[in-house]
Image (tube, rainbow, N blue to C red; front, side, top):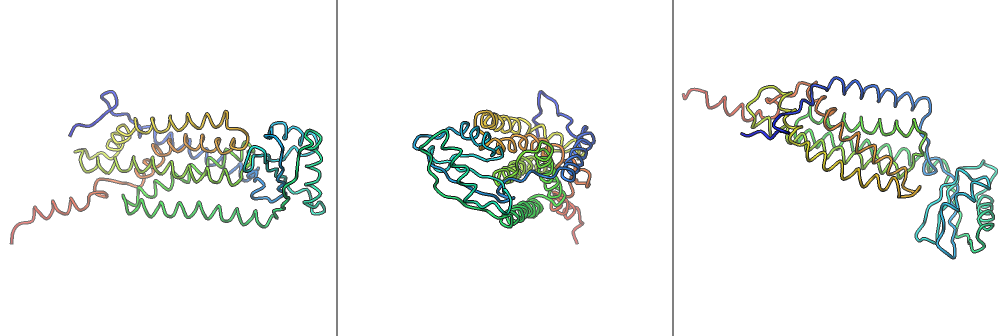
Length: 315
């Protein structure tokens, strides 16, 4: 069999696995330290607050709206288009038990009318903290369920050592991405949670491609060295990994730079998640499988049994 190699040679990815695992361990520990010291800056989806829907006669200027609200004591307001360019949704953190949603809504309208007389209040809603706590719980369960399903699928599709490696890579991506949001103090809301779940899917796809090539090479390449076979497999899939990652990152950079404040956090989570997911599919998943002693015998036991049966003498 002719082995495809980059520039005629196989890249020694796994020679750096100990260094990579050390870096990953430090990043995970730093993330947990940040969780303990600073925690996550949960948005209104999780903390509760007041939502005010406002209508304009002309398309709304979100930058101007944010500036006006900041000048009138609502610097923490989240402003986004809602349904059309003439409708916006203003979300505000709780102002205390004694401040009613109607009062806050009227203050927002009064502030916006200073800049535009055509402002009309559509509705006011108050989201209690208990709803936010329920969303936290449901979001955590969603990620946990996804990881368990992935563990079961990869265990049946490949081998349980690869399953452990794949889930370890996904946990690695989630923890470090959340750590970035904790360290930088970026707002974490349902949009970011959706981005985290998308990162899990992206990283898993990369890991599955690598694992499938490793299994194929275990069966076809006449080499007993597990590390060398994994290096060959990673080299063969490198072009695909780079093309997929780079094209995805280019799109995310455009969203990050010109997508506006509404999806800035979403683009940040995906941009970092794609980078760290590509890294983990190369180093974390494969390195964990090697550390757990994966070998040819684990992936092709039926072939070994058949060969052994052929050697048995005839009765």
